[in-house]
Each structure stands twice: as structure tokens, then as C-alpha cells.
Length: 443
Image 1 (cartoon, rainbow, N blue to C red):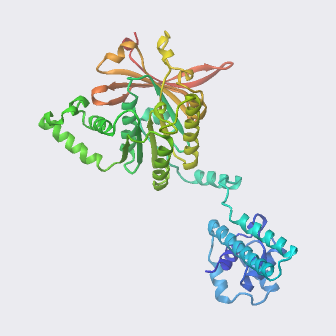
Image 2: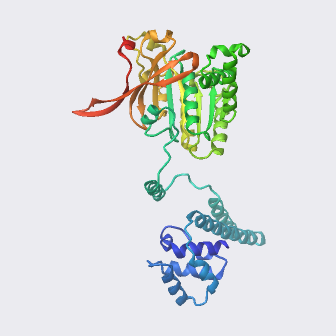
Image 3: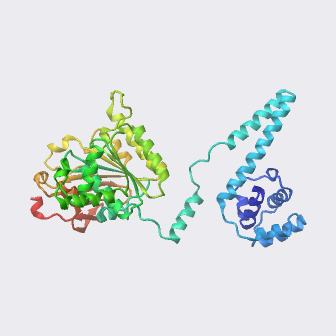
């Protein structure tokens, strides 16, 4: 179907669009379509249905369309994107024709008037070549919300059930989630756990892990330890594993081969990381991509650049990552170190001010949480009790979640959950999710 006819077909079923689009009958090369646009500009309605438009148009322009054309028009046509693209193409070709005429006139007679006309037509064609602004109209936002009311929506990327609850169903696009922790607490292991939990919920998920401290081999072995329960230390010499452990590892390797997970350990500068994220996210289905970066303070803007102002560099990095989550509609999980001042305090529960090197981390992140041990003695135990406390959450609620962590097996396990009403403001209360840690652990 020619572009002229597509536009007419859509307007017959959606005449109200004449009030919201820019349209000119001169753009149409087909005489009958040009007459239809002239009629609609002069008689914009309202109309009860397309049959009324047909009757009134035929009265003004008898025999403009043949009977078989009206039969085609009778079928509903609701694809607004095709209508808009067709209308834009007609406008572009019309402007291109006008430019060619102006160019021919100037070459025939290079006068000031002909030059001015050529410049006008050239500017109009250049304006049509400009890309469409990514900003959506209020009607587009409204249509999206109405569609969400009419049918179930995806909950987001799921990991641990208690974390999913904090995110109101899962991790969604446009979210930069920063997780701060002191060295040696287990943030790299927690990254492995988040990834594997997400993949267990959605095997089609695409994940990039940028590990700037651990090698890809280290992270692969940690992933196998998580999957099998075989102590990660044994992978220093896998040949010495027992027969049963080797069978477990072989089965895990077969399962990991199917995952859309890439472990990066050679990408240290932000442009390289952004390039990979953009490429992989654009090729993944909507809602099925997440990037994990471990950790922020090792990223640089340039491999050879001198770091005269590391604070400013961190600000640029976090701002670029945040903008990337919005541009691609993806979540990014960013791990970060904490200031050493935390170790000097009696209460070592992390605060937002403990994020190392820049306040922009807090500003640019949608969510900020901290992974920390509930007591000093936990760092020396075979099974540790660690809490994940959410200090900022634009995507859900604040909470403090408890996990047990077995370092040898790289495995985090959520603890029990209870709701507590926390007093806020003048007589108000806010439900706070708190995971229960045994009293003897905190003592």
C-alpha cells in the first residue's frame, strides 16, 4: 500500500489525529489522497465513524476512490507508528522535491532571490533530517499506564526474595544500585550470589560482570563453588578433588555453559565498560539485561591519565553510569568501597557519608545499600552473619536484611523476616522490614 494511502486509511479510522499532527495536502502525490486531506482540513469533524466520513467525502469529491479501495479502507488500521512514519516520509519527499526545484532555479539564474529560496528549502530539509527527540509526550506516558492497568507487567529481575520485596518485585531498568562494603567483607561473593540467583529465576537473562579486582578465573571458580558447595580453596588444585566432587564440578560446568554470563577482568576504563554494556543491552530483550561492576574505585576514565582529582573522576563515572541506566532502561549494580573512618567508630553500621571519595555516589544512585558484619567477631567465623542495610531507595522501601554467609562455599542465605513500625515525623509510622538475627550473634 502506498504511503499516501496508508495515511488516508489511518485517518479514516482516527480522524481526531487531524487535530494533533502537522499535515498538508501538497505532500500527497496521489490525486484522490490529496483531495481527501483537503476535505479533512476543511471538515475536521467530529465524525461518528468512518462511514460518515466516506459519505460526506463522496458528496464533495464523487468517484475519488474506487469501490475496491473503499473495501480496503473498511478494515481497521490502528498502527500509529506506521501512520507517523508514512506522514514523515511524505513530508520529507515533498521538501526534497522543493529543494531540487530551488537548486535548479538558482543554477539557471544565480540571483539573490533564488539563493535565498535555496537556503530556505535547504534549512527545511535539514530540519526534517533531525532525529526525533527521545522525550515522550504526556499522551504516550498515559497510553503506557493504561496498558499496564489492562494487563500484568513484568516484576523486574529477581534475586533473593527479601531483596525483591524491597524493590517492590524485582530490579528494574533505570536503576543504579550501589552496594558499599569494607574490604574482605564478601562483596565480590555477594555479586556472584546476586547474579546466580537472577539467572536461576530467568535463564534467558544476559549478565556482564566487570570484576576489576578478581580475575575472570577467580570468579568462575567462585561461581562453581557457589553451585556445587565444593570449597573454593580446593580449586587451587582441582585435580586433588574427590571423585564425588569432580562429578559435581563437571555437572556445574555443563550448567554454567548454558548461561548468558560474561566475566570481564581486562576492562579497566569507563569507555570500554560502557561500550560493552551498550552493545550487550541493545541485543538483549527488554528487561533481560543487568550489568554488575566490582568495584567503582578501580575504574578510571583513561588508562594512562594522571589522577589529579580522583573525586571529580568518580563523579564523572557515577554520572555516566546513571545516565546509561536511563538511556538503555537497564539496571546496573555497582559495588563500592567505604571510607576507613568507619573503622574508628564505636557503631560501625555504615551511613551514606561512608561512601568513599565522593558524595556523587549517593546523588547519582537510585539505591544505596551497605553490606556489613553484625559484630567484629563475624569476620573470623566459618559462617558469618552479615546485614544488607538500605539507606536510600527511590525504587522501593528502606530495610535491613540479614544473611548468613559461608565464605568457603561463596553462598549467602537470607534469614527470617519481620515487619516493625518505625516512628517518623509527628506521630507517623513507617513499616520497616528487618531480618531477625539471633541475639547471641549480636552480643
